[in-house]
Image 1 (cartoon, rainbow, N blue to C red):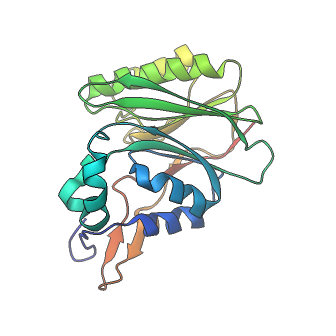
Image 2 (image 1 turned 60 degrees about the horizontal axis):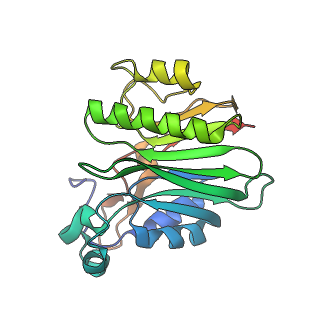
Length: 237
């Protein structure tokens, strides 16, 4: 995000992401397209148990991991990606007792839904849907069906990058009618946290842009760590 306020930097930003997540207030975090080599360090830095499910472009990792550490723009997304679930420890009901993942599609890119069951009964499912309205709706519907079947009668959160805006089409209405999943962010958003069988204490809201800005150590400009604003909500089970 270059300009007179932000700098485009070509270096590894894993330390900055660790610090940002460690300082934020959350119990469960759902991340998408995380470089696989980041998953363990992110868990350690945030005091969280973690489960990762690899998604697309991982077959070249033996060749791309090293240059990605020093010149990430050379490899871009070809470093590989993973969906990551982080669950902070220390509170009752937050122990992970089961982890599963299921492929939603393999072409043009591998997409998965990854799920954890906590010892308090809550099930959490994480996805990054494909691009394009038709692909995104197909992936989200499949993820909803898989996650609700797996969760059974337990409360469920389905969240992530849906690549789908509620203001277009019938997908979110159908998710509510067919699976009981409700609570999208807003009509323009593509990142959502849908809930079934739990009490939502706060509506889903997105972070303001400056909450994901960090200073650049080599100048006076800022670095924006993600092109997506994290969305947050509080629920009670």
